[in-house]
Image 1 (cartoon, rainbow, N blue to C red):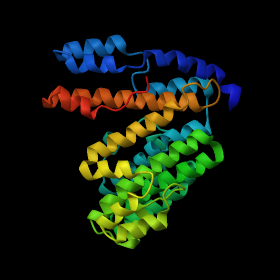
Image 2 (tube, rainbow, N blue to C red):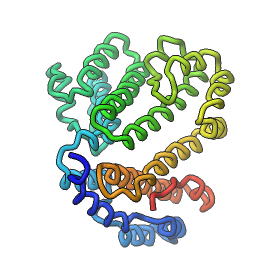
Image 3 (cartoon, helix red, strand yellow):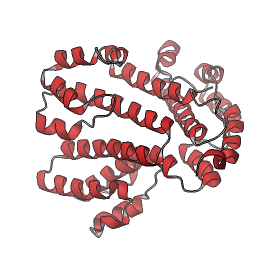
Image 4 (cartoon, rainbow, N blue to C red):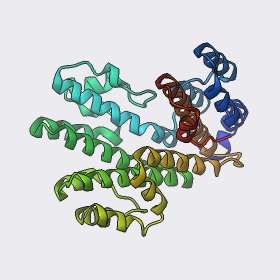
Length: 311
């Protein structure tokens, strides 16, 4: 589905954008005197799309199956893959670790491992499931298995964006991959990880070459930072040195800014993807405010942590 075939869905999404929480709404939530006031403000402003699962169900009700839109949920699918695999190895229930929405149900993932039949999984994660199982059972190295699955998720997103996505989706995936690689690279340099681990942990993209990034990591943290400061992501690197939290906020804001580039589009999947991204930011902000209020954080601290909004 593409072009004008998305027109009805785009029209619906454009109407729903009017109900997204604004900066003024966020300020009211921050300043709410009691939890009851907080809940009342949120209830008055929220639409029926209160969770990302609600948003996803709404989008699917208009467009049905869409290989392009499904890319938005790949990271959730691969996260759930990790949860099921670890639970199976440790003989625990994975239910508390599942993320929704997802393309692949947790039940399907559990069945795939229980029956050792990866064929029931989508093509974009089938090989990863088999290799991750073998990797974890042979090495018992949970960190290595996690890195492998995380990198495989990004690779799957790149491959599917190339096959099914438009220019916007490819830019979105590249952005997600670059920031994930920068964070991984910084962490690995601090931990003095060796090349064998880095080959698994770093994805690489058209924006940030894998081989060059690995060489930089192996040169040490200072060498890595020097390398990254000569890329278009120097500002992000500066924030990473200051605080991982500031870096995460910068990355989230960059994704929202990319979504804003679709604001005037009336056709195609882009406005639908942008709306999903907008709701991600909104829901994350509500959670940040709620957690900060519970911990007694001041208003200035809360405001500093809030993500950029789409509206």
